[in-house]
Figure 1: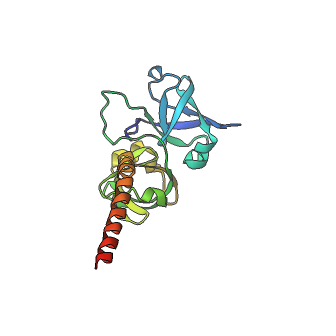
Figure 2: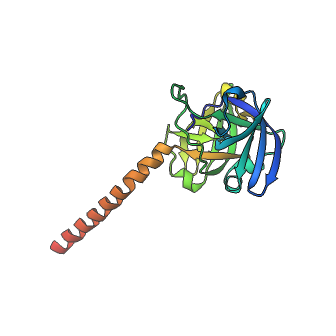
Figure 3: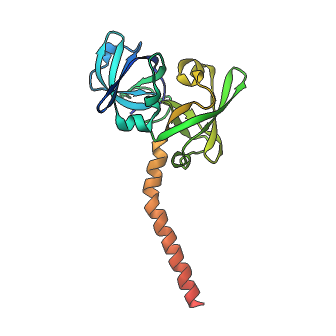
Length: 215
């Protein structure tokens, strides 16, 4: 579990293919003495397991499925990545609850200056667009953002100077791809209300049919 608040901008040191996918080596300024092997870490919003570490760097195994479903397969040595260690009890949740399980890949449509900030327009897959909520949350490349101005599969998000400086989104441009994770709370609500809503529609249809027969 994560919060969508980036702790460090890491740098890809090496990408090594493997039969199961790939092994990424990432240089980071995170306090690695407090990072244990087997712990989870979000890399551009994708939850990965730390399999090895050395001075100033960690290694993670990326499965073939993760390479297919996220932008991690696009990474090359020298690329910057957003890093966040897993949530612990007592940690401030400055963003929102993030699982690190990427739903799909979206893209940046446009970037418009607004003073020192930037107004980004994003486009997400149809499966993720259904979870867009005005003033709700979404995670893009591991960054917790607030959604507004929804139009179909597109929406806007305002990035302040701090976010532009300390995340990879400030280094990306129109057309660049981003990992997308929808707000898990919205998905749980849909899952829980789905059967009830379906039963409600069936009851309404049955009632209408009965009234029609009575008339």
